[in-house]
Image 1 (cartoon, one colour):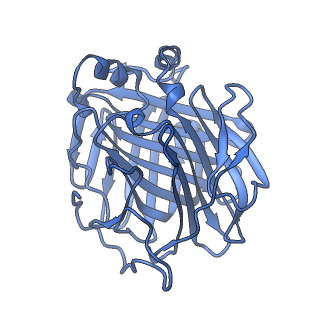
Image 2 (cartoon, rainbow, N blue to C red; image 1 turned 45 degrees about the horizontal axis):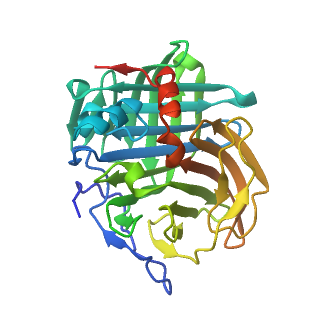
Length: 340
């Protein structure tokens, strides 16, 4: 298990008393090593999301080394073993009131990438750790109309955890819940947007293409009324038994393993008819609002219960079988331009 630089914010307990750790659990140094090595054909990403305190706005950001949803990376891998650093991106999406959305995802090559332990810069955008928070400086263009997306996003974790969990039997894909509970401050003057809210930060990494390990997955994270964060995963591998995780995190970073249940079917998305499932479902969501309806994934806002406790959060359904279809990859450059 690779290490990352020590970025302690507060002491962390490993697990809540009386709760066993989940299978495939290991420990790593807290925080992020933005210079972490990535294997050829592999990937590494850092994911951030937030919901505004008034519940009217949200955002997601994924920072890639080896963009798993890139048609350019997929095409290159079909020809030869491919360097992940040649396919990097900042994917930033703002969801405003009334369904208003701003999307940015420009792929860039290794020539535009600079990485160190505490910083990642890609073209005109970057993220830096200052000892207390991560500061993202966004300088991108929205697609398809090239509207500027400029400003800052500050991510302040309640603590940085040491948790790492594998998502497959062969331990080729791992998930690190870096800061399941965080505060997010969004300030994007070019879009007239400034707000604060409940946030979340994690990371995924793999030593092979995502589609080699998964046919799809459903994932959700929710902030509970108690202040804890609930996370549910169901990763599917073709005909294998799904890999399920049901976890709860406290503000001190401690992790509790909860009972993982079978997923419950949710309504398909309206446009692209993507299947959605509620992993480890105790109840069906009281509210399911679609934020993203694309040919191979869906992102939604949910309100439901975890361990009998109400919570609000983000839900994602991903179909790698859909993504691998050539017709889907032909559509993607319109949303994901590439600059070398």
